[in-house]
Length: 444
Image 1 (cartoon, one colour):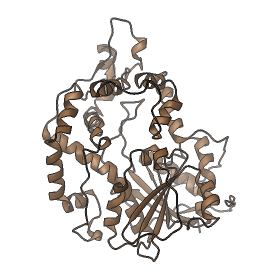
Image 2 (tube, rainbow, N blue to C red; image 1 turned 30 degrees about the vertical axis):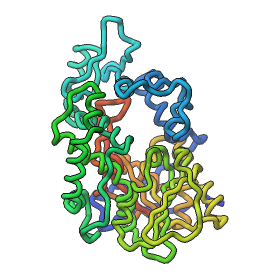
Image 3 (cartoon, rainbow, N blue to C red; image 1 turned 120 degrees about the horizontal axis):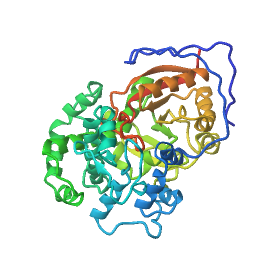
Image 4 (cartoon, rainbow, N blue to C red; image 1 turned 90 degrees about the vertical axis):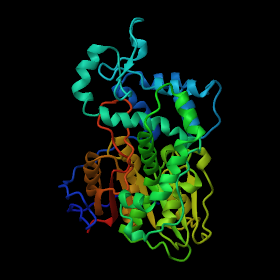
């Protein structure tokens, strides 16, 4: 069974390792008050859209020809599309996808709230934020001007991602020509892959898929340099997760050359980590540790996509291979069913990308058994967060739980693709895995 919370008399601030680039934050303990478990992170995020823009969740379902969240969830889980879902042509698909962003960024009015004489118009600079009229746009400009340029990138990236979905954008791959210890961040990674990346991007720019994409979206095609910049950002977004795992291996001292291979459990995994994930997406992790004896990455979470659910096995890994599998469960249940019964080995490291336990008491209660389990079994653990504010809040919770934080800071392999806050488009965009926290066992 999962261990229970142990009570200690004294609580200490995290010990910071030399790799930390963010100065230590003073964190004091606060009591934990928990309520009934809430919905999955996917559901929690979807319905929270209505808190900023009432009716936005229903607008999204309507534009995607869906009747309920359950139908939406079925599709992102990789299930069979329901009756009525689908589009007649690419032009309709892109138009309906864009329509899900149509609400006034200032007064939050939806298209259905407007009179027949009014139409939502986007900002001509970023083409990413809509207004119901000049008055709202002028009133909103002091806020929007701070993010308008960054939202230009978001608008392009949102369309260019389709090339990843269709498989037309194939990521550069192959053994690293440089020693792994030299590649410390994106600058050195791009320098190492330089000629290969240039050839890949030039081929995509001249491809039929690129021409077809911009012919379908109903807007001018950006300049080649802007398109290359978008492709580079998308590349970092896909590779951020495997390279962040590699960062964890390095800092936590995980031996990836041990006999029988190594296992990483990605806990709290959702469709973000599993929907449309391909087997080769984690190859870069293998190239980072040349000569490894096998790596098994197991995605565990209640929102793991259906098409990612593969059986887990305790059999030894083949040297130099990376195996991906998934298990739909809460992690502490997975631990009791799979690890304590000996079906699979203990993990060498556990990772949680954006666990979100700081966001609500419901999510905190769902995560509490897992955090205590990782603490008491002394499992090397890495988590990532979107912002410095989330970093501080997450550290506070870990200190409350007497967890020994050994390192935290800015992630050198953060995604460089800005993420717009769907229901609050003028909020400063965030970046996936912008910060990390690593911990091991109970606080001394």
